[in-house]
Image 1 (cartoon, rainbow, N blue to C red):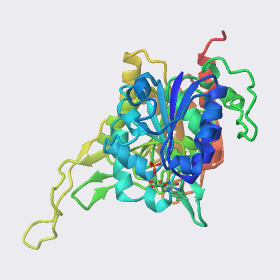
Image 2: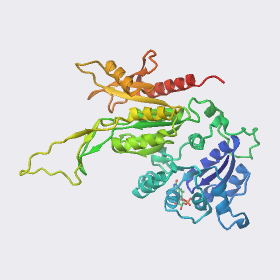
Image 3: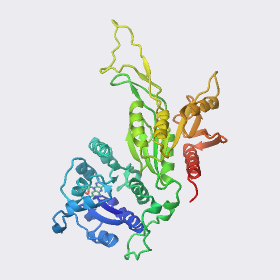
Image 4: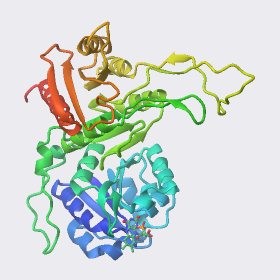
Amino acid sequence: MRIVLGVGGGIAAYKVASLLRLFTEAGHDVTVIPTEAATRFVGVATWEALSGHPVSNSVFDAVHTVNHVRLGHEAELIVVAPATADLLARAATGQADDLLTNTLLMAGDCPVLMAPAMHTEMWQHPATEANVETLRSRGVTVLEPASGRLTGADSGPGRLPEPEAIFSAAMALAGASVATAGAPAAPSAAPAGAPAAPSAAPAAVRALTGLTVTISAGGTREPLDPVRFLGNRSSGKQGVALAAAALEAGARVRLLAAHMEVPAPAGVEVVQVETALELRKAALHAAADSDVVIMAAAVADFRPADVSGTKIKKRDDVADPVINLVRNPDILRELVEVRDAASRDQLIVGFAAETGDAGGDVLEYARDKLHRKACDLLVVNQVGQDLVFGEDTNSVVILSRDGSEPQEASGSKSDVAAAVIDRISAELSRAVPPA
Ligand SMILES: Cc1cc2nc3c(=O)[nH]c(=O)nc-3n(C[C@H](O)[C@H](O)[C@H](O)COP(=O)(O)O)c2cc1C
C-alpha cells in the first residue's frame, strides 16, 4: 500500500521513526513528508534512510514531478503523526502552505488518520477542539492522544499514542489486516542507529486485529431547555474500559461518547453525542463499517416532548410546568434489524442495566430484553444508587442468544471489559469456519 506519512513539528516526531519502521516492515511503500518544523526535531536524512525515498517539505523541490499534486493522488492512506495544534488548524482551514498540507487537500477519498500530540492546554483549547471537530466531521480519523508525562515536568492528555496503536488504527482504517498487509519484508538491514522496529508480529495474532469495533459509552442527556436536561448516572467507565480492551485486542475502535466522567482511551476515534437521537444517528452510521457493535451507553428511554428554546421560568402567575415524555427509538433493536436486512456479518452486543422489582428479578428481565432485542450477546448488570454507576467495579452475567450457559464476570471494570472482549473474540472465531 502507498502511504504518505506526514510528520509535524513536535517532540514526539522521534517516535514516528518507529511507526515508519512498522509500516515498511509490513511491506508498505512510505513517503515521508515532514513539516519545516518537524525537520528541526528529526532530520531529513533519518526519514530518507528509513523510507528509502527522497524527502522534502517544499512544493518547490523536484517541481517536474508535481509532488504537491501527485503524492495526494497516489496515496492509499495518509497518516499524520504527531499532528501538532498548528497542523490540525492548517488542515481544518484548508491551508496549502507546504507540501504536507497540499497533499492533504489532494487526498480525495483516501483515508486520513491524524494522531495529535501537544500540551494539554493546547489540546483542550476551544480552537483546537473546534478544528478536531471540523476534521472529524469531514471524515478524517483524529485519534485521542494518550495521557501521561508531556515534554516538560507536566502531565495530562496530549501524548502521542504509542506507534503500535497508531499502526493498528491506520491498518484497520485502510481496511488492511495487519496479518495480510502485504508480504512482510525480509528482515531488512537497519541503518546503524536506526530505531529498532517494534515487531508487528504480536499485533498480527491479537484476537481483533483488522476488525472495527464501535462502542457506545456514557449517559445520554435529553434537553428540557437550554440549561436543563434529563440524564442518568452512567459515568462511561465500563464503556471506556471496553474501548481500551478492544484496542488492546488489536481492533480499530470507535467510541460513541455520550456524557462521560472519564476520558476516552488514547488511540480510539471519538464521536461525541448528547441525546439518544444523536446516538441513534451516530450508531447507525458507524455500524455500516463495523464488525462488532457494543451498545454500553445508558440511553434514555424517554425524552421531553417539548424542549423550550429559552430557560423555563418559575412564575407565580403561571402553573408549574408538567413534563410530558415521548419514547426514544430502540437503537439496539434497530441496529439488529438493519444488520439482518443487509445480511451483514456483524456481532451486536447489548448491555442491560436492570434493578429487578416485584414483577421479576434481574435475569428474568434481561432474558426478556435479549428476546426482544435479538442481539447476539447481552451483558447484564444489576444497578442501583450504590451499585455499578460511577463505581470502579462491576459484576455481570453475559447471556447469549444461542441459549448457551450464562457466563459470569466480575472485578474491576477493566476485568469485566476483558471478559466481554474475550467472549466476543470466541464468538467471532466460532462464526468463521476453519480454512
Ligand atoms: C521543543 C518544542 C516542542 C514542541 N512540541 C509541540 C508539540 O508537541 N505539539 C505541538 O502542537 N506543538 C509543539 N511545538 C510547537 C510547534 O513546533 C509549532 O507550533 C510549529 O509551528 C508547528 O509547525 P508544524 O505544524 O508545521 O509542524 C513545540 C515547539 C518546540 C520548540
